[in-house]
Image (tube, rainbow, N blue to C red):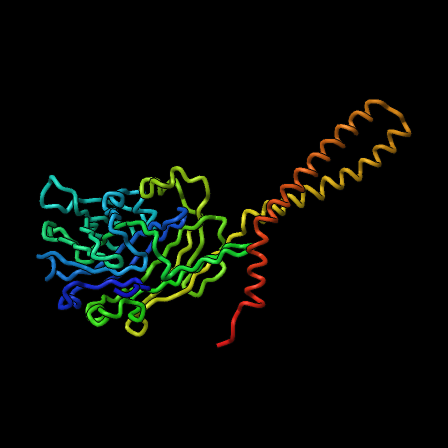
Amino acid sequence: MLETRSFAICVKQKEKKDQVSIKKAHINLWLFLQKKIIVDVGFQLDIKKSLLNEPLELIFYTPFLIDEQVAFEDLYTKLNNKLTMQIIFNDSVLQYCSLDENSDTDEASLIKFANKNPLILIKPKINRVNESCISIVIDPTFVRKEEIPEDSNWYIRFRYESNRYCNIFVSDNGGVNDKIYFDFRFNEPRQLPRDIIRSIQASMLEVEKLFVFMMQDLDFKLTLNEKGMEYIRFLEVDGFLEYMPELKNLKKQLLVYFWKMKLDESNPTANMVIAFEREKESIKQFRSGVFVNVFSSAILLGSDGLNKINAIYSMEWIKVIINVIHYIFIVLFISSLIYSIIALIRFSPYFFRNIFKRYWGGGKDG
């Protein structure tokens, strides 16, 4: 199968396409891990009553590729938490009601909000089809349908980890800054596997609203943002500890970047390029070393003035203090100089490599 460069959501049986719609799609990318990304996927669905008597299978395509050993995590239990739901949906939760016909199971709940329409939170069955394709089965047959409000939608959410996403990700390790780029697309047919694109288009579900969240290290700064940015905020770590236990051992602050896009028949796809930039640690070390060098040099030069004062007054205790200060700053000067040289050696190959690429290795214009 050819590379998948876009997210897409389809219904397995295309004859059911007109009876299912996606009101909201949530894509959450947790970027705080070193060599992998945590991907959360959620869908708010409007399912017609005619489909509630049999399981419904959706097919989800993702550019964040899935290894065979990857375990999917159904987030039903984590969302069955009042505080978590209030943070995620930005509304007060008034009531949780179980909708399971069997009192011994907990796989469906009715959630009532203060200002939003109710949601039916249901536990899906998630399976890997191949490295870029996921099967999502929603089984509403065990739900007490007489208790479903007319204005309610269904909601599912799951999670997995990916360390293979080079098809939409570019990393540029420069001399001074590290840069990363994400080419983000949703329901973009041109970026889906060509060998099955016709069947995908025939069963692809339209999405009314797309919500994209990126949780990124504070050291990375957003440098490219095409459209749809709603806000940037600090992550409320305490409120997400139950939802994302990995945050408990995190020693750095995360920023939340949020994009919201409205899709319709005239604009059924979403695409944008997002870039982050972070200053290299070696640059920070070099800058600190230079500062200490300048400061120490100023003190050493200033000590000549103190020596003149000592020559005038000939006080022994002043001479002792001057000598101690003098030797302390000599040690600081030498150590910071060595530190700066080491930092300079670390980043200079990247610097000169980028200079060469920019002025001599760029190739011909197309």
